[in-house]
Image (cartoon, rainbow, N blue to C red):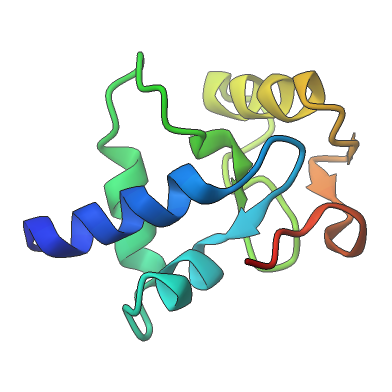
Length: 102
């Protein structure tokens, strides 16, 4: 990963509005990184805990939170989503209701 790729991912991530979500793959697509969903995941995994970037708005392509349900990361993400009035049921968000399309 180079700094340009990281910057493009951050830019797309920062553009996701309050109350909306996107997927790792869509962020890669919008950042012009074909087949870059795993790269997006790696970049987000390296964010500092106190980041102001809205990492919690990023889900798997099916709307599922990517973390195992028993983890702190899962609960932090779920709480972040619910604080924005995004409905999470069984660790999943209804993308037709909350998906962001720039």
